[in-house]
Length: 426
Image (cartoon, rainbow, N blue to C red; front, side):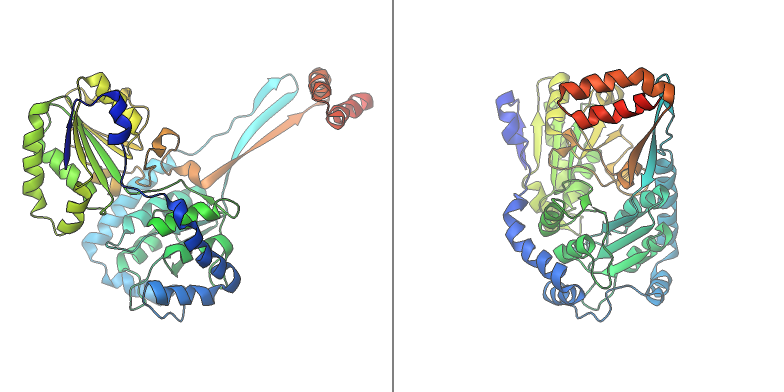
């Protein structure tokens, strides 16, 4: 883990680099899979599941019997935890419902906006090294609240053709309509183009490896919308002399265990806490079962000492972290000045784990600096907003000449005439 003290602004670009690759280099690779699935449907899906997930599938959809069996395999403690998390996520996202108002912009001219759910959405839940049933909740719950008619979930099966029971239970309680045993870029292709078993959707959500990310970006060019560009997970911790080194270390390691390309950064003006934090990380690391993965992530993680609080704020807004944890005495004041972050965790007793699982906020967030321009997944992600307008006869009389003048000066005579014929008819 690198320790950087008092870097100049000219060095910020270099020390802000993530351990990511340019997924556009994988476009040629994933296009072969995408085209094959587009042309050959389920047959191509089965072929790639055998090749990549080492499983021979007869049915790509999870049956009702499998869902019932999965429920019996999930412990009561976990079921209750999933239900509690679901309720909190539901409460938070339901509060985001849009209420449109009819506005009279001019006499006789009324405009308004209406929120309409995206009818068909696809959710991708990775398999990999851990069953991410929490991601099911984070995506399916707001989709259900938004009113999406068809919620399709794709997740890679095990070598026995099974989906992890907790994923199936979370999907059931969240209102998923179809659960598909398919992972990787072939899952993205299935949802983008549709197959005999898997319906085409209008927007795809969810994290994934570099091939999934490349596939999502490729299909988003003309086939389907996606939630956001995605990359490896990351956290920045801001701390001062009042912060608990054990808390900082725990937050560092909880992020680092996500994957070998995850990144954790500590930014501080207090040089004296660096050594206690490093020591706490080393002590806690020894007790982690995902030791090898975590160590690799720590290799490109950093501790950065800056001159003053304003530099800390400026660097944070420059880095634009996915997760930002503020453990300082004045955490509220600092939080108010943050403009670029996916999700902010304030105070010593607010770990990132809370947002990852059960506080209610969404954990599908912009990474790799995309927090400069992107929001995390929220209720608006699952809806589109349509505008409406109604103009009375008096309204077109009053506004008509304005429209006609603008159309004439843009040399669009048919636009001008659409108003003229109405004014002549009055």
